[in-house]
Amino acid sequence: LVDLDLNLAARRPASQQALGRPVDDAHLRRFVAGKRFDAFFQQRSPLDDVDRLYVVRRLEKLPLLVVLGLSTDEALAEWRTQVVWFLVGTLALLAMSALATCHYLRLLQQGDALGWRSQAIDANSDAVIITDNQGVIEYVNPAFTAITGYTASEALGQTPRVLKSGRQDDLFYRRLWATLLAGAPWR
Image (cartoon, rainbow, N blue to C red; front, side, top):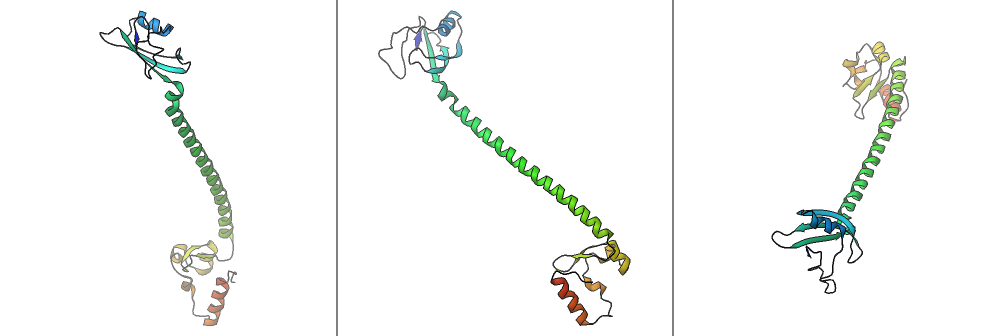
């Protein structure tokens, strides 16, 4: 508490040596002269030489000012913590964006490679069938439809058994499947 003559009336934490001591401060002099109700300023404390943020408020019907000074380190501690978390979050988002961009570019490259491979399979004069691991046909190339007479829509969802003509014996089909299951091409 400071009286209107700018003498220290009370202090928390208490300091008996400081009571009654004049507080010679230009901000407080302007505050009292301007008849303002409250103010805010920053400066180094004349009592303990610590940089502080001050709030000054005039008490109604009393010739006293309440002066609250909080060290700038204390006042800005929460803000600094929030800034650090904001920066950490921003860096994490940037890292995730960079990873996503790399992944997207890799997918584009793979898509281009798959496009070229697909064109090569489509242009192949040999019949090509692609099945899932249950043997269900998922893809046939144009040569397949030309050679077998089946349209792609007729073949998709079927198994290669649809091609069984009855002209081949069981040994022929055992060799065919042994070759395919070994990962080798069958002709």
